Length: 186
Image (cartoon, rainbow, N blue to C red):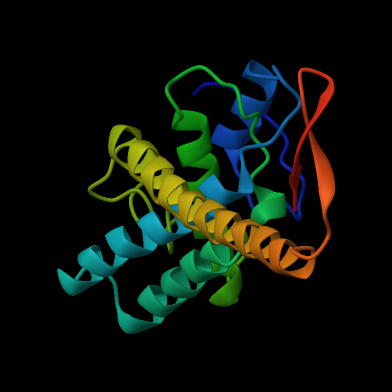
C-alpha cells in the first residue's frame, strides 16, 4: 500500500490524481481544456473498440460512452485538476481522465463514487491503452481541432480586411515612404 489520502466526497477524481496534485504542484495551471476534450474522444474510441470485443454489458457500456461524450463536450473540465506541468510524460493527466470517466460512469449507473469493482479507471477506462498511446493521440486530436479553429478565424479576419478594403476603396490619401510623402494610394 502506498498510503492514504483523503479525496473530497464530491470529487470525480481518485487517488492517482490526489497523489499527482501533491507531487506536481508546479505551474498552478490546469491541463488545456482542448486537450481534455480530445482525451474524451480518444477514450471513447478505445471504449468503442473494447465494447465491440465484448468487454462490457450494454448498461456499463452506455454509461462509459456517456461519460466520454461529456468529457469531449467539455462538461467535465472542472474535474481535470492536475497541473499542466508534471513528471511522468502525462501519466497524471491520463489517470485523472481515467478516474473522472470511471467515477462519472458510476454516477450515471447510480453507484457510489469509487465503486471500482463496477467500473475501474485502469481495468476499464485504460483497457488496452497506455499513456504513451493516449497522450500523444489526444495531443494530435487537440492540435488538429485548434488548427481548424485557427484556419476559420484567419479566413474570417481576411474576409473582414477585404470588406474594409471595399468599403474604403474611394478614400484617397498620401502614401508615406521613409517618413516622406509619396504617391497617392487608396
